[in-house]
Image 1 (cartoon, rainbow, N blue to C red):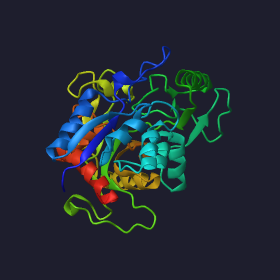
Image 2 (image 1 turned 90 degrees about the vertical axis):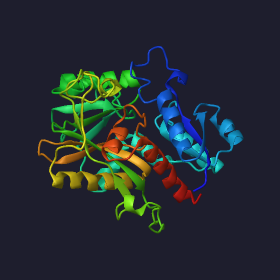
Image 3 (image 1 turned 45 degrees about the vertical axis):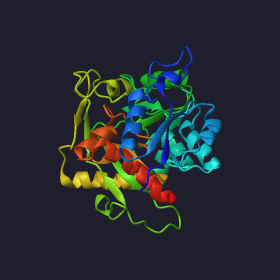
Length: 352
């Protein structure tokens, strides 16, 4: 493959403006210079001309002027309940190829309740849930304490704290009210899953309607369903500064920091559980129409069975600290190969 002009599209933390009363983790999802520079450097090792474009209000005009062959999209978006869909929507309107999921898939993945509805209708296991638009809404009869409360439209563990696990009506109402007021969005309330926590990353493409299976350029790297699955990562939240939950603060620590949670990869689990997690990851990804890369989070329930918690179709790609990089390295895939494989999957899809 010849080199391309690749625009790395992102929202950098220091360029994002937040309101004075924004929560302390408001910038948790946005990218650092380390991530942006790391991706560009990785693309250049494969002979591509990589450059950066800020995913801000000027993006429409800037990307038209830049005329990239393809965009490597990691943009989180600036505002709104479908903010991760904004850059894909602009690029589709302009006819510019890009990596990662399309408009609807990104919108569904960011809306945790919508994603859970899709999985539930697809027959995939996810914990019972209820969406609260105001704190006084009656609790559904099938929802039993303890429950878990979090914002419906955030990632990176935002809006999760020591009060997220609620044991009675008073705690529920207080935490729901706090989420709605602080994050200005509905609160998602789920049955609390008390078991071990896992995440599984993958590369590959969901086949679009009417599309014939594609021959992978690296066929040895992908399974018969067209995916490469990385080793299962277990998150030990009993270690580090934040106990029992994996939130934005826990994710902010360097891997070797004593305050960081335990990252156990490959996870010490039976082969049958590993294969179940792999199968559920592919099905969850396909159900939403994921493309190129993604990561699916799981917890074991009181019955010992795995349940899908959420999906990230724009997983963090910080070369120093991110779950996707941990699993990639554990699977023997260097950072440069991971980044360029994402690009190559998109190139195949667009026939570039």
